[in-house]
Image (tube, rainbow, N blue to C red):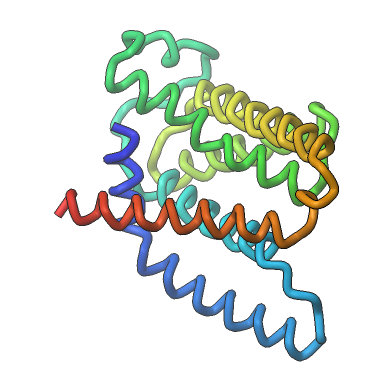
Length: 203
C-alpha cells in the first residue's frame, strides 16, 4: 500500500520536482564555481533531498485525498477508530508517522540537534501549521495527525542520533567525504532503479 502511495505522489509531483531540481542544481553549481567553494556531493544531495521531501509533503497535505469528514479536536479519538492492521490504519496512523520521520531526521541533521526538546517543539510547530492550513483551505484539522506527526519526527530524531553514534565509532578512513559520497550515490542509484522499475510495472 505504501508503495502505491509513493507511486501516486511521484506521478503527481515529478514535474514540480524536475523543474525545481534543475533550477536549484544550476544555481548551486554556479554559486560553487563563482565563489570557489568546495563541492561535497553527499552534503549537496542531503539538501536537495530535503527540498524534494518538502515538495512531496506539500502535495500530500494540500492536494492528496481531500477529506469530507469533520475536524477532530479530541486526542486519540480518530487514531483508535481504525482497526489495527487495516488499510485505513496503515494509511492514516502509520502514514502520518512515516510522513514526518524524514522531517525529524533532516532537521536534526542540518541543525545538529542533540536535544529531544528542540525537535519536539519544531515538530509540533510544523505539524500544527500544516493542520491549521488544511483547516483554512477547506480540509479538516485533526489533533491526532499532530500527535502522530510529532511521534514520526521524534523517530527521525532518534534515527539521526543512532547514525551519529555509529559514525563516531567508524574508523577514520570511513569518515572521509569520499566514503559518504559513494554511499549516498549508491543509495540514490538503487532508489532510482527501484522507482523506475516500479513505474514501469505500474503502467
